[in-house]
Amino acid sequence: MKKNKNAYIGISLVILVFGIIFIPKIINRISNNDIVDTDRHNLEHTSAQKNDTLAFVGNKQVPAFRFINQDADTITNADYMNKVYVVEFFFSTCQDICPIMNQNMKKVAKAYPDGAMVGIASFSIDPTYDTPEILKAYAESYEIDHPSWNFLTGDKEEIFKLSNEGFNLYAAEGMDEEDDFQHSGFFALIDQNGNIRSRIDEHGNPIVYYDGLKDEGVQMLIKDIKKLL
Image (cartoon, rainbow, N blue to C red; front, side):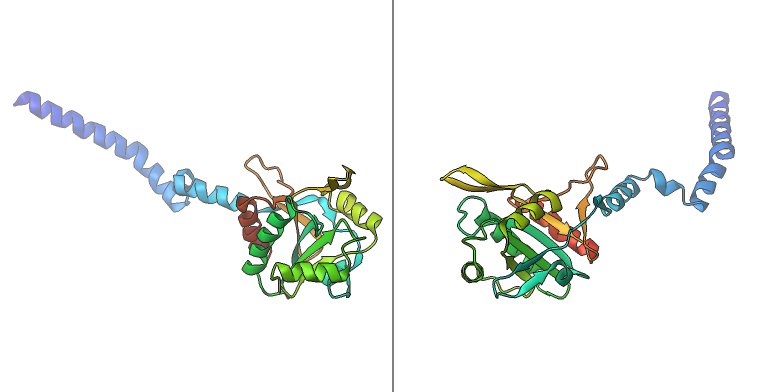
C-alpha cells in the first residue's frame, strides 16, 4: 500500500512539473496563433499560397505587333490590353503537333468564353500559305467561335522575330521538304499589362511556358488564367 502511495505521489509530481513548464508555453502559442505554424495543414496552405504566385518571366513585356486575322481585320497587341491572353505559334497544314495544340487550346477557350476578359492569339509561321481565307476555313474546321481568338498572319520575318525574340518560343523553317516548319508545342501566358507570366515550380523557378501537348499543362494554364483574373 505504501508503494502504491509513493507511486501516486511520483506521478502527481511529474504532472505538476509538466504543467508548470509546458502549459504556459502552450497557452502563449495559442494566443499568438503560433501553434498552427507547425500544423501539417497550415504548411500545405503556405505551400499553396506560394504556388499561387505567378512569376514575371524576366520582366519581359510582349513587343508591339501588328498582323491580320482570319476576318482580314488588323490586330495589334493593343487589342489585347486589359485582357489575359494565351499565345501559340502554328501553321494550318501541320499534321503533327498543331492539331493537338489547337484541340487543347479549345479547352482554354471553353473555360473562358468571355472575349472581353480572355483572348487567344495563334500566329501562323507559314503566312505565305496561311492567308486570312485559309485561316478562317481552319478556324471553322475546328468549330472555333471564341470572340477573341485571332488566327494571325502577316510578314514572315516579323512573325519569326516575334516568336523567337519576343516570346522565346522556338520557330524555324525546316531543313527538308518533309519538314517545312519547326516550332515548339508550348503556350505563353500574358497578363492584362502585356507581361509574360508563369507558374513557379517547387524550387521557386518559373516554368516559363505551358505544355500545349499535355492536358496537365493546359489545366495548369486554365487555373493560372483564373489567378490573373
